[in-house]
Image 1 (cartoon, rainbow, N blue to C red):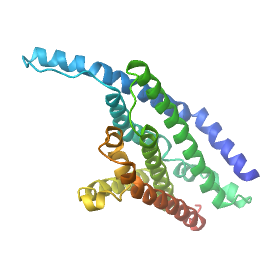
Image 2: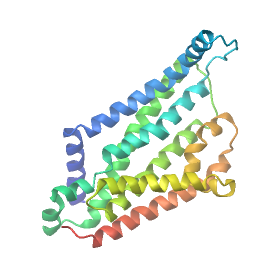
Image 3: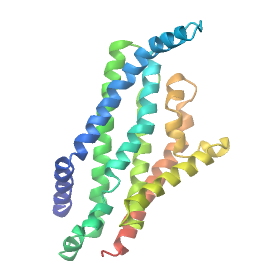
Image 4: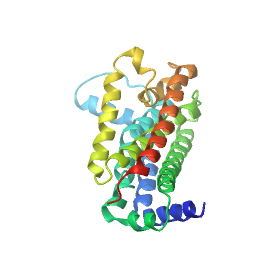
Length: 256
């Protein structure tokens, strides 16, 4: 526990000093603010564009659902991508600087390295995501004061998908210890393969990708909570397996 506590403090201090932690918080807060604001002004923007184009059509007023649609679109695409780019090198950076060699030779357990870095990424992701979701929720209540169905579950779905991506980053980092680009390409390749596989309806409902593709459908009543049970269970199981594989692989990874 002493090793793990010291390592966790090291991650927090380093991320604060190199502004990575601050950058993620700022980006996620911006997403939280912009999502309801974009939903609020979008009808006016469309109205002006259509008027200038000579198109006559009635544009419905925005609603709370539009705000959450913007949030999940921004977070599932931009937010997760920025998070991976900023923190995806958390392990490969240590190898490029050779900072782990002396620590491991002095008795640092390799398992603790993966566990602490994984916990730290989960901590940062959870903190940033919760702050962003709360900001969107507060502004949405302020502008519309409308209730939507299964809001907490919809928020949880993207959070779970983020944990899956973190586990994928950690496992890929143990395979490509000296190349963040290889780690990034591995994550991108897996996501693209899941997107391609999700074209088939019978397969899509069992993939992690299903979670971030049906947040809005759940809020709108088009998807029932029971429909996300299996993809949630499978995503959770795969996430745990990837974390375990990362630990086992890192135990045998060369340190030079």
